[in-house]
Length: 377
Image 1 (cartoon, helix red, strand yellow):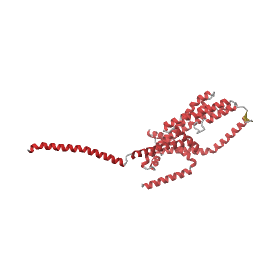
Image 2 (cartoon, rainbow, N blue to C red):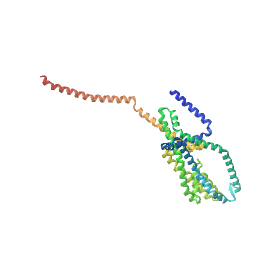
Image 3 (tube, helix red, strand yellow):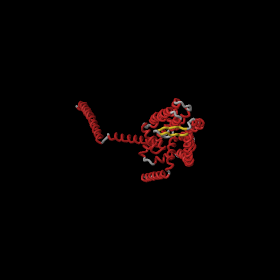
Image 4 (cartoon, helix red, strand yellow):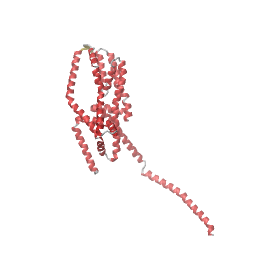
């Protein structure tokens, strides 16, 4: 295949991919998440194949395992809601019938009935939206699972096809970017899990010190909410603070919001993310934070993965460019002038070495002549 034909087909592939991305924009985030999860599951699938499993069984097993692990993340929240529902109802019953609020010389009366009506209305609207979005969500989940399975099953073919588009001289850079993408994605998901575990560990002593009875329950909810970008456990702390304000416990509300916000919502991100980002993906903590928060604020929830991934690829590209420029700089030291000077010095050394050799040869010749003179006589 000629180079022109190869590049033409590559351009056609890029154009077709761009058209598909535009037409399938509504599921583009689903496709992106499926690709990132397939990246993480590829070592699992490869290990299963190495142990004698077929490609189909290995791909299906890895996909099923990932689906189960995703469900297990939210199982603790569902269990807590089921077991503590009666306690939650009892806490609502402790609220006063009305709350008098004085602000800027004006007095407001907030009744429990009006708050209940407002909350019920919000829940009903949320339920209607969820029911409307349920079919679309089901389709996206199905697409997500099938995409992961397909990417794992046809992984070798996809790798060969993608690498074939890269010129031979640049395939080492493509492999480096692929390695960086895999390490960064692994770090992103590991960081989320590690941050949730740290949140749970830090929340237990805080809730215990603040006098709460359901310490493990509240800590579990805080840990699960850590998977929600930006908001995280702050929703739980704000709800607890509002509850204490309704009871007139302003000091308790300030403590749970400020102390809990510092230790539970803020400290895990500061302690865990920067350290693990450097150890698992070799990305400075400051750049990881820029990618994480910048991605979320720019493109929404998908930015949790896309932002740090973009930063990781940028760092790897900068490293490749630096290595290339340094190698060119080292090669520039071997200029034609320096090469000629080096050759002249070698020639001079050879002549200097040759001169004593010639003198030594002349001396040997003279001695031979002297030895021959008596015979001639």
